[in-house]
Length: 274
Ligand code: DGL
Image (cartoon, rainbow, N blue to C red; front, side, top):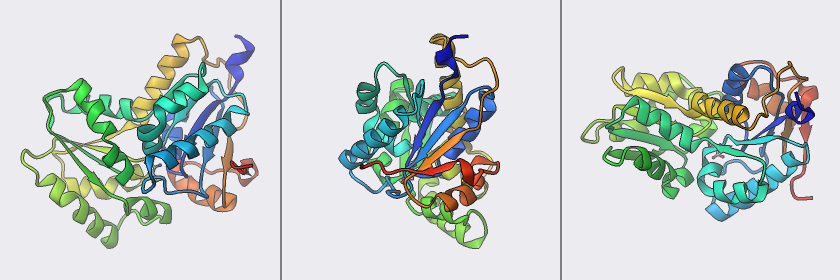
């Protein structure tokens, strides 16, 4: 094994939602070491302009590159939609994997002829990246989109089930599901939405397949590591977390997204603008 294979994989998100992607990566690639950066001081990205999100994403990934990462995962849908080409250019030759192509791939696999519905942040919906990625794979499939901005703070607050969560889910999803023809598949096009999966599934009903890009992103990363001969072959040290604000809160609430405890000792506060 070359020494470079022991280098960590960088994961970047606007906050802690990307931990749902890290969870899938940990399950798929147990021998890899990960370093995660959550830009918790500047969340949400979903309501900001593409230029601002691109600037933030460049700063965040530059901070991760200082930790000698061998591959970068852009776990944030909004940042992938706004900034993937800029990140690929800035980070070359380090490979960069976004979540939108794997999400589109999974959606088309679930409903090859559509109709496909996408729920995401305002920025992701407006940018049209999911629509383009699905169109490229299934040109005839009808596509409907809906921004669900409140799902982000709800997930962060742990308001993921019960009466209020259900009422808000109905408010967003009922018009989307009433489109003719009714969607066969619903893409959770935001890192935070898997935390609300149960309530979304209940409101959407049994006949709508929910697609979460986390697992397909992990597959794409595994494939790229193999292709470039970068896979680590021995179990590696503790995973690290960098945040731009509130490390204690990140360690506490992040557990919900990661599905396992986060040691506050492994969470470091960083300043991306210095
Ligand atoms: N991480 C963002 C995404 O996947 C959601 C949170 C935000 O708006 O920053 O789109």
